[in-house]
Length: 236
Image (tube, rainbow, N blue to C red; front, side, top):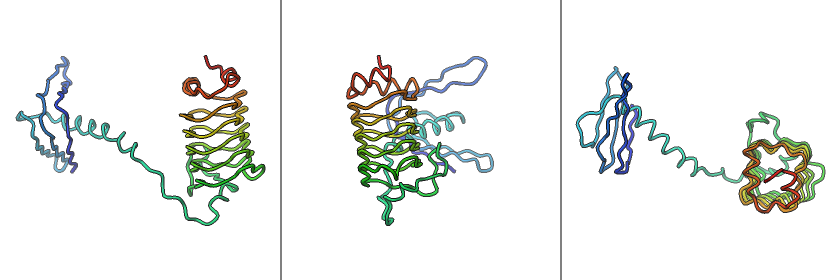
């Protein structure tokens, strides 16, 4: 049995009858919340409502259920939080091993939690590593060599990558929101699906970057990109 308690605004909506001649049946305005109980047990269905009308067709129960789930799911997504900071000893060193499971889809056997770790000027330990779905927010990678690294679906919001070399790296679907990427090198780098909202991209190099058209349009809205960077990207 599924029970939905749906607070609705006074605005009305309509149900469309699936008959050869489609007809629209307006539902009277609502002045309070409704409760709908749908049950598939023994083929029966019960409905309790505070509607100001007596009956509602069976299809309404399904339509309202789908509508309710669709309306609430964005709220749930918006309230999602990152897991607590890992207490595992030497967790920052996990980046030197990386994650080799499900690189493209960010699937992992164990989360790689690199938050608040400091890899400043690391020139050997990160090169070519797979950091799929790694948690990297507020970490420091300034001056590090991250060539050929794989960061599919990584969360790097607020991290610092000043002067990092990302040449030949795969950075698809990475969240770089508010990250510091001044002087970062994205030479022949895959940036498909990655977001750079409010990221700092002064003097970043985008030579031969691989990026989709829609993602490019979004990236070009970042005003911190230098004139040379915009030219390399082909921003209009």
